Length: 465
Image 1 (cartoon, helix red, strand yellow):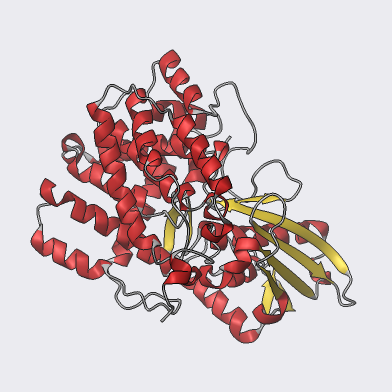
Image 2 (tube, helix red, strand yellow):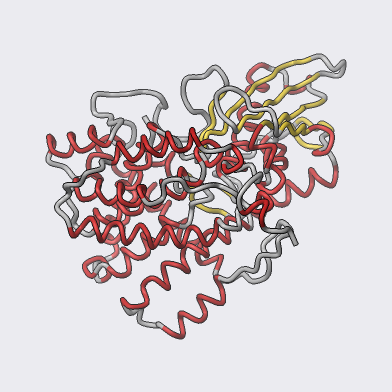
């Protein structure tokens, strides 16, 4: 079972699979050493990065995230400023505090080994931690796969690890694993998609825990936007990409102080842009379902909260409930992509990240527009169908070009998909399950050059300058 709080987890930019996942894996390894009672015996830790993690690791912050995680620092709890301070100390002093307490020498140049041409069976995003004693004898070694959205899987394990939430891998009679399953439960129980997802969530959490957790997710999304629209200058990484959100925000406040419906798309573009600029800067974001696609759901949720008439004028508790229903619906669709295909750009290209997020956002919006389960499923299908084949070709291995603008485009596409679905009665030729399977097959056929390796597409056709 995958929880709504796995699909929407709080972490740091710029990448869920290349930053958040490796940091979680490193923390898991540090915890394993502690459980084995070997932390104090360690004199050196080597980190091997394979495949996509090695190919774009520098641009995605993978190397330093792996080191910081070895100090048992978790992406969901560390403050961005504290993360920057710890990373700076490790780089400067060439030491880290293993497990948060045991000091060992550590150099990113010497102790992190990049193996971009070696892809381990299981997933293109793999990393291995090996601890040695003073005689260079191996004390422990673990291999992890960062499978997208911050999820990690330890080699040989049967379920994702390192993400807070319900017991992973457990299926109950009410669990749904396909779009058809989901629609059948909606019909049999006479529930909406958000209600079916909540019913599943309540098997492991209380209603109050879910309510507060979803409110917290929404607040972090809003906080991310507010931080971003205050920042200026260039994003880190060497591309000198200028942050645009502050100027756009200042302009829109002047041009459209009353948020007229005709200006809605301008605001949607801004929200998506702001979130992904903050992500690219290493700020705190909600993985939704990945960091590279983190701006889509906040942008469409903003559209719903601002431009759906009944929500706009509703009291705060009803607005909170509407946001929760949006997120629950989106999560129900997101877990189908996670279970039946992939949300990892390194595995299926950007269709798995931006495409999945667009489908999730379209479903959430259709739910709040009063859509039936069939219309909601149709909205998700439309959005994904028109993201099929989307490649992941980040320039310089950075989550900046084309990622930032791509989030804005996909958010608008999600709104259009929901509007189209609401004009119909839910009957359509292509099911959500079919389009998810098509996405999976397309990703399998896609050249590795277009799957987060920065070896093809825009990554090689645009000069770095």
